[in-house]
Image (cartoon, rainbow, N blue to C red; front, side, top):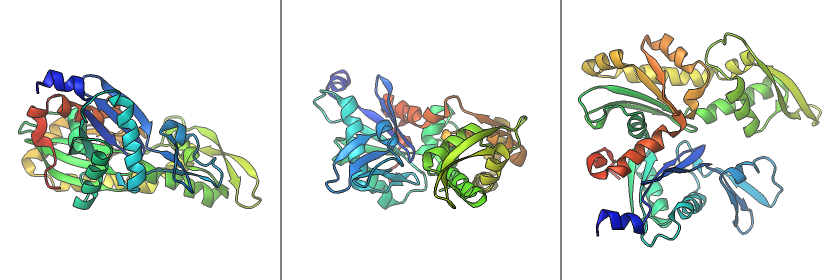
Length: 341
């Protein structure tokens, strides 16, 4: 079957199956889905009510008969059945009336186990894929920012997602040094929630914590410190309550997860072969992923490593764009795919 005819029959796709968001890239079309990795189901029949953005709007606002689930935890599938349902829904959204099942490439954290890879592969196959390939997230992110991954040159990528932070030194189509920690955006949100609970006796939800992080969170002091109003439930009176929270407070709440990320980056650098370390000294570190958008995180890493650190353009889509590059030119880049699963 010719490639042109096959493209008419199926919609091959790349999926960034993230803890916080799922993005789908379709060959020849680009990114066609960008939705939260959230599913709302009925508790009794496990019937799906909403998927993606609509389900996320329900978080913290449902009654006893409805459960809102995030099927991904720490970058891997936590609830097989719900994850499969979510993947199938996204595939159907882009597959339309194509007759052939699609080839799918899925991004996975570099630190996942064989059994976790198998679960991801099986979920994609049950959801309708004719063949499934996996690629390590840092490799995909490096391709997404057009680093020379196939050349004998050291490139360093730090991909901070919702569930994991992936740090990799890449050269000659492979990951030379890899470090994956399960500290990322979700840990930052948890840190904010616990800090506000401990210091202000206020219980806030996941969405409020994430909003606070995005609006006033930072890794270093800001030129002009800012405040906002946080809303939740008073733990003493049980009544709704609003407080003013400062960016200094949020920075204190984020101190531990940010320090863990910085330490992991330094640890990866310490394990880098000397010749590649020289390349990184010249070329610097590239930050990708939603967590990398934390204010002044790039400057914090510059100060801690004494290396150039640059935030990628559109860091949220780097991984899926890189995976799409493999999909678009499969023969050239198939050696970047994972094989031991």
